[in-house]
Amino acid sequence: MPKIDTAEFKNGVSVLLDGEIFTIVWFQHHKPGKGGAVMRTKLKNLRTGGVIDKTFNAGEKLEQAILERYPMQFLYQQDDEYVLMHPETYEQTIVNGAAFGGGLKYLKPSMEVTALEYDGKILEAAVPFFVELEVADTDPGVRGDTVSGGSKPATLETGAVINVPFFVNIGDRVKVDTRTDTYLERAK
Figure (cartoon, rainbow, N blue to C red):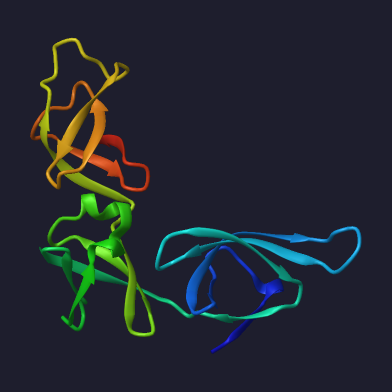
């Protein structure tokens, strides 16, 4: 395993700590008045999603976890298992619904997702940041409702519920930011 020094810390770098894989979310070099310099960090556990604060001594070496990211295609769901296929090898892999986190509500068949793998095991599968989905149910728009008006809840084809402007109707396709669960625009 390659080692990484605290001086090489960057956001997004993954390290092994106590048998778990953590990704650096935030770091700060700190030199107190007396004593040695330290590196303060916020680390996200890739298995649980929890974030912890951890302080390392300057120059401390940690094992770096080399993660692979690659596209996969979502095929279908069976209970809480989701079947993904590698687009080049056509190899199929089953992942648990927890691997998708909050993006699971936007998942639909044939969608391309990004798999994050470590040591032959998929730790995380992420839906695209922006998706276009059809509005399956919402209150009808009323004449005179404008873009600058308020918003109403709408259920999308995948079952996700987001707030949309009053002028959006059933059957409209909308663009959604999956990271913030927000409506962006009507799809062309």
